[in-house]
Every structure is written in C-alpha cells, then in structure tokens.
Image (cartoon, rainbow over all chains, first blue to last red; front, side):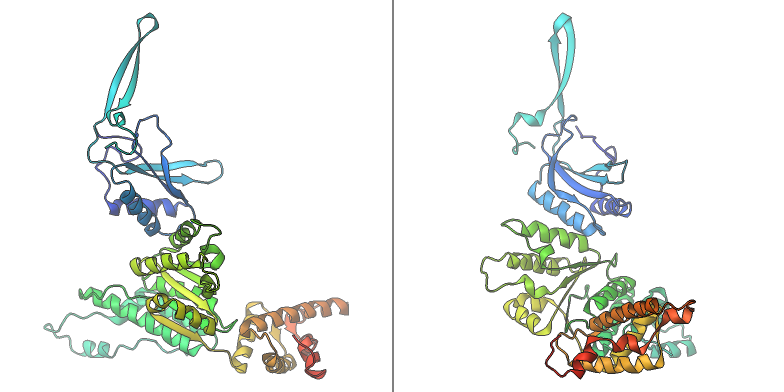
Length: 138
Length: 319
C-alpha cells in the first residue's frame, strides 16, 4: 500500500530534478528546508526524526540536495520527507512537506477492531512493518 | 574611453563572405551582449584603482568562461574549470572588495548560479569542542553553495602549535567539497602573503586545489590619491586645490609610518578629515552655510592630522 502523506503524494515519486526544482521554489520564497526520516509512518506519527538542523539562510538547492543524498545513504530503506518552514511572523509553520524517499516494499496498515463497552466498535491502525523492532523494518 | 576587452578578429571575415558551405560559427559579440560581463568589467576598471595583475587575471578568467560557453554550443566540453582562488596582499589592498566583485562576475558569466558572497573567518568554521566543527563547516558550505565562499585570514584555520586543534578538520571538509562540488561553489582564501605561504606549505593539498593565486600589490602614491578622490566623490565631498596638495603630502608621510594599511588608512584619514571639517563649520558659527561650505574639505582639515605633527616633532613618536 502506497503511503500518501504530504504534498504530491498521489503523484508518481518526484525525480531528483523535480525535487531540486521544488527546493528552489522554497528558497525563492525564503522558506527554511529541513529533512526528516522515519521507519514508523503511522498517520498519527507527526514528528519524524530530524536529519540535521533545519537549513536557514541558504541560497541554492545544491546544499540541500547534498544533504538529501547523505540522508538517503544513511537510511536507504526509511521514509524521508522534506519540509519547508515559513518563519514569517504570523505564519511560523510548514508551507510545504513532501516525501522524498520511500522504501521499495510498503506492506501498509492493518485495521484493528476492538470491542468496548456496550458493544461499541473501536477501530485503530497498525503498520505491518512495526512488528519488527526499530531499524529492522522495511 | 574604455576599449572592448574581447576582440573578435574572425567576425569581420564572416561578414564579408556569406558562404553557405562555411562551418557554423557563433558570434562572440552576441554572447558578450547577452551576459553582462562587459558592464561588470567596466565597473571594475572604473571603481578600482590600480591592481593591474588582479584585473588582468580577472579578465583572463572571464575570457575563459566565455569561450567555454561558446565551446559548449559546438558540443565541446572540457568540464567546469576549477576557479578556487587565493588572494594575497597587504592590508587594505582590496581583497574583500575584489572578492565581492568576483561573485558578481561569475554570476554574470553563468558560472555560479546565485552570485552571492558568504564571508567567513576561522570562528565561523571551527567549533569549540569535539564534533562541533564538522556540522559548523558544513552549514557554512551549504550557505555558500551557488555562490562564493570568502575565507578571510585563512591561515588561522591551521594552528601547527596545537596538535589537537579542530582547524584541520575544517580544512579536510573544505578540501572535500572544493574537489567534489566544484560547480556548486567557488572558494576564495585571503590573507597576508608570507603567512598564506606558510599555510600552504603545511597544507599542500589546499595549495594544489587552488588554481588561481593572485597577489595584490601595494598602491603607489598617485593611486592612493585617486582612491581618496573616488571615496570622497562617493561620500559627496570634494577637496579644494590646497587640500589636495596637503593630501599628497599626507599620503607620502603616512606611507612611511608603521601600520600603514593602504586604502584602509586613506579611508580612516578621510573620516577624520570629515570630523574636523564638521567641527570647523560648527566652531565658526558662520550665519549661512552654502552648499560649497558643506562639501569642501579644506587643507587645514587634513593638516591637523597627527601624522604632520609627528613629522615635525621628529621620529620619536610612534603611530
């Protein structure tokens, strides 16, 4: 099951050239780009692990692309997303966030049903991959 | 009148003979017009006094990049040339100013994508504890990508007297990026000549990765005067005839004193002259000041300098 989180997630994966163009767009708007990675892509897991600090004051996409390659090399089977943070006063939040790498195999999520009080049905999601310990998933 | 920097002897021949079988050719004029390089070089010529060897080298680099651009149109590719540079020279010879201009030129020629300059010193690259240096250096490098990284007084990066100094780590990361991401950024090192030489002796890898070693000569007295006049015009002041003669005298005396920093000393002298000029106007309590009064620096404003007093009082005084 293909993970659909963030911008562009219903499109085919972006090529490096396209990612670079997106970064250039972010930089011309003055947004700070940062990288995050995880092997637990539960929809409620909003805060992924940061890869390095957010990159403020950059002028060119080359630095971020180099960082992205380094992150891919370190975590070849993790999800990696690229965030663009707008620090303008009053906004101060993410403007753009998209997945820049995903594992080859995405087993997807299991729907768990739970009986609770008064025959109420409760639902929850669990990623198949999280059966295994951290670092050995995917 | 400023002569064109790039002559195109073939251009005339091409106009005379519109031979259909002729080889495809490119117009060097067209490429020149397209890039703003001539305009930038003209400004360089106009705004920087002297510095002959520096200007020659910059023109050579500009010509190389332009020819590379033309060659690419024919599918000839030699790979991006290495443009890392080292500026050596005494204080105040214009190293930083030229570096700033360099970023602009490389941008105009399409070599660097953004054309900004990031000026750093040792403090910005080297960390204070183990593991602090690498991320710090990388961050600076990332910021400089697409432009020019200017490392002032680069020899401070390497401190031979301290074995465990983190400067070496910064140098290694720098070298790696200078080699592998040559088309992403241009590194310019700057510093005094003798100390830079010692720095390169202990870091041969750095020396060999820098293609252009440019030496900034000291200014001659007439060049310093031209610089002073340029600075004054920029600040919208002017010297009267007598003040000009005094300034010539001042420059000759100041050059012989210790801690002479070329154009920087001149700038400081002018700033002090402005101070005295303002004070003189204030003290005179003249009713109505004309525009002329406000822009003219008189001989006495310069004459009051300590340099003249020391010269009169003999050489016992320092500074």
